[in-house]
Length: 273
Ligand SMILES: [Zn+2]
Image (tube, rainbow, N blue to C red; front, side, top):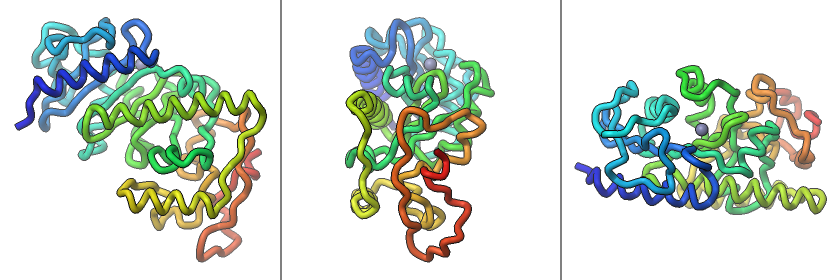
């Protein structure tokens, strides 16, 4: 049996961190933790995440009904619950509005890949989901097409949501993503960004596998993908309105193994530009 109080303290701690990093202005952001099959700890609405006390955290069921707690649950709980339904391995979800990643959400600019080693190993391709009014089930449903292939999602014109097996792990991906987006914006202001070669990127993907992190680019189904061209979530770009406008496409890489050269399904970055 898990110690609910200890988890509430951890939620308060991560709340302080997202608030102090400017990831959640005023009362923005929400954090949840799945205690059991039908019990989820949830931060309250209209409450700064920087000043939470364990008593402020409420308990809800998997339908979003409040079971316990003196404060009303977050209005964005349905999005969290949808992630728990799709991903049995996930125990905690963190949603906030980190400014640099949210800039990409507003511009609907795909996150360039093959630029920084840590990002390749920890994040991989980051999807941007289509815009829906927050709080609704339609909003919660936007993550369904991507949630099994990533631990962090950018929500168009809104913010980010990330998830993992602990509260801290769920938060990690957001912090890594926002730091990366910040660096990309600074590098872009200096000029162009430089991409890894295929060999350099393959070495990082190999390392990622060795360290026990999954990446669709290491799976058989993506064996012929262009590893730096955002192939994992590219199918969704048109519907969401995503297009490369600020960053150049990565150089075209040769298709990996069994390349039948006529593989029309895996487009490369240059074709899109
Ligand atoms: Zn939000």
